Length: 336
Image (cartoon, rainbow, N blue to C red; front, side, top):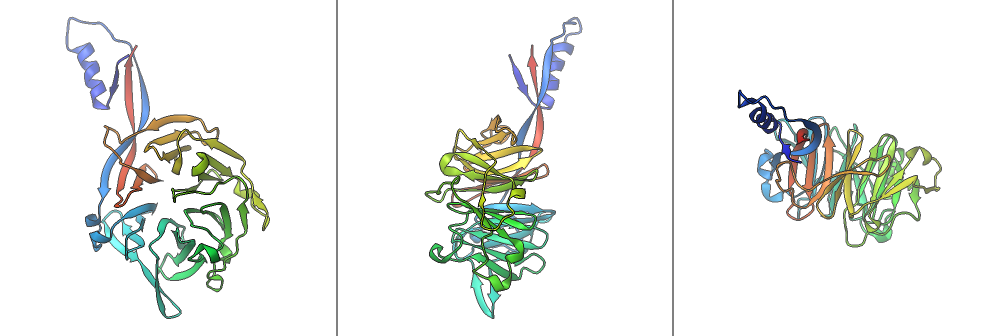
């Protein structure tokens, strides 16, 4: 069978086949289907962000809320969260330091992820801590865990997801849950762990990416070492100190690094630089993508984030890239 990948090209080819010769009334039977594609839109470079020194730009993760983009930036002496207005490229804030009890503090060059809700910004650090800030004025609130795993309730944090009044955190060894109500200034460095997994997650050797994401009232967690996606029902996490159980798991053909959801499908970035579309209910692999539509390379992707039809891909190498694209449907016509 011959396949034509285009919106316009398919029409032109059919026109040529059926309409160019007035004396030829033959019809060519064909079947048209629609496939999802990752259409490339732009590369967010440091120069595109008004007010930012491009030499300090190294995006490692991103999340979007309305017209605001939160970029986790990891660079020597410039670790922080770049907060910008998407429509204009205006830098709203480059959060790199704050004051605590009158003393200046800053991140310790280990930022790996960022999460937000309507009220707070959470900055995930591999140095075994998550720093929390007010979203309205960027003021410091508290720290979950603390620098130095020997004295922290967390161990080399990788990712977190806000779900209602709880935070689901993926660190080097386990999934841990914290009550948002416990994240107070008084609990700085001593926010209690409400619950954690015991046996199903494996220790991540070598600082590979891990991710937590939510969809349809469930929590999904990568487990790099075993090449699995693990699923938690957060409604079952109700008893303090009780172990977190996983209701199911899916084994991937390649090691998963991150995931997000678009229209009830899970898209998993894998270590072999593919993005795999999966049915989150069954674990069935639906399709695999190796590049942007048209064959443009996306390099070595690390994190993926969807916001409506828009998606973002950050790289996992240093220096890292931040690609923006759009989900589009391409028609494929097959001659029968």
